[in-house]
Image (cartoon, rainbow, N blue to C red):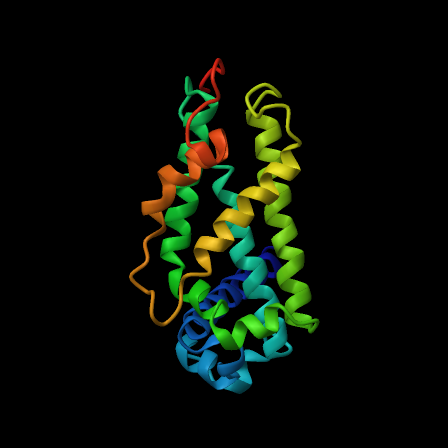
Length: 212
């Protein structure tokens, strides 16, 4: 049994190495522009040996998207210092997510370039995997809001609706990334994001309202 478990760990490690290589390759040339040969070269494998771990490039694409979503979800599991208000906890999680996105900037920019964007907005298999993982991210944020905020702290709004609105803001910022905007730093928008989330377009509480 120990031998089998060791082999499972080795396979998992190899798959993760390949996915990291794929992330680099996709970030450089986009989903469609990247070949199995490109991924293999980046990972230090032969193209033929990749098929030991993945049946096709499409399976690598699907696994990469799921891998990135897993990273996103794990951020919510990192302990937050005690004694913070809901807004402060929100700021901590937001900063952690922005740091993760900045670290993965190349692949997000690659996914959002013109060629990849056509795939994401189409009805092909890549688009299905993308949208399924997008829903996973929304569900995880909604769950975090349920676990960390009272109904009063989120204005009585539905956590899932707030999660979707938040993703709309984030996706709008992400969509600026591309070959001509690699200098974009999302951290610059953190304060705006938080203010908009808590107080709307006015950027301040309504008259007589308590600031959370």
